[in-house]
Image 1: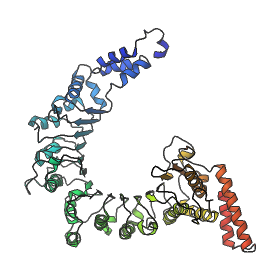
Image 2: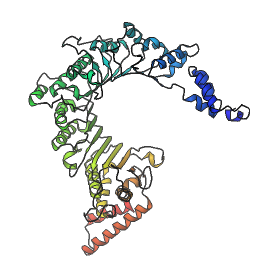
Image 3: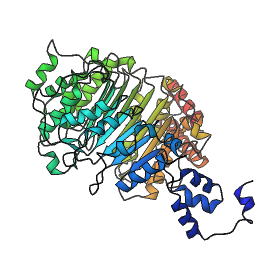
Image 4: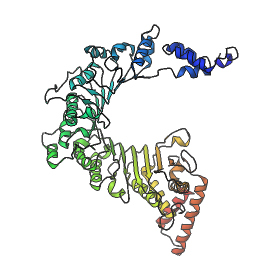
Length: 571
């Protein structure tokens, strides 16, 4: 019988007393579980005291409490609930050097992820027993170390080697007090320890200045530590660790099995773009050749981005590429960079399955700043994000028309286009505000012709059309107004206009259309509203009548057929 059925027979305690009782049971998870079953009041008091799948230890007190809980009789199986362990250093009473002794690995037999944050082992040295007890965490496959300092690289590698099942390593803002002397670190590790498959290096701008006094030496030491793990197949690098393109290329040669390469952010005072002399070794006969399945280039300045693309602009590097990502922050891709990316797409050809793109797109840059997609005839996923796009109606339609015309793959299963609008402008003729400009019917008919191309015949039906709880459909167009000035009338005009543009896809049930801020308070549009349908039909009819008068009632046969098709799709 449920607690509600017994509510009249149990004494009614004040909520403050219930909270206090549950607080005394903090270290007894099984009794807390029983408290949750009493009634709603007890459930609310007990549930926030539970540790869930993620275990967070921020202080010595939290460490002691949890260690006592797991060691207590009857609580041993409780440790099986946790798959993530997060240790944050307490500068007043450090725990980083003792936690595996207080909570032995056998108490958390299913922990997969270990995160160590804010450690400063230059100030508090671990005992040798630390590494011995750490080795009992045999289920840990992922190690993340963030914003931490170690005395030297040897100490850092001892952590890696102590975890026998380690496969994924993330270093974010890690520094060394004493950088390595060149050649002092072994260049390889034993096959028993060489199990790493994923390695991620991220720099950190917020580490204390005294931790980062020897930035270049520190970077090279960290790179040398990890270069020994030749088993890595997925490598993510912050380019601020490198002084030149040749340095990057030489480092990649340590990973012969590399198939996924992710590069980001080279914005740092000590990094200079590669010169012609730097890039010379890239093309030497003995230089290692990349063969990638995934390549990502994110938030990299244009000079670096253009030169880095030379690494993958080869037939061998592109022969197995199936996933590409290009993201540019606060800048518009140059014509040269777009041409290099187009060359990569050409070399990849029908092998490319997924392309993701993010970048600014100011006036008249769609043709020169965005790569050509004609060679990508087997794309199954395309995710595009344009920023700083003018909110004039012709500009919005022009961007969409160019992109949708260039797509040549009939295999699309996922198409997401997000356009961030910058400000309101004038109408098509430039004479009246966009808020009051009527949709130009001729351009809508032309756009419907683009949507009716055979390459879009197999677009998947939108699940969001049948289920409003679906966040995003496989095919989604999203328009977002940036900035604080938001005109409801302007957004209403844009929304109505874009609905008219995409009426054929909305009628087919393959599209989810989102506008933010939405003037009607809707999460998304998945069908053509009747009001938009009637307005569009009237405006198209007016254009047909004007064409009849202008040409004396005569029309081109092909034009007749096109307009009739459009009339059916819209009306």
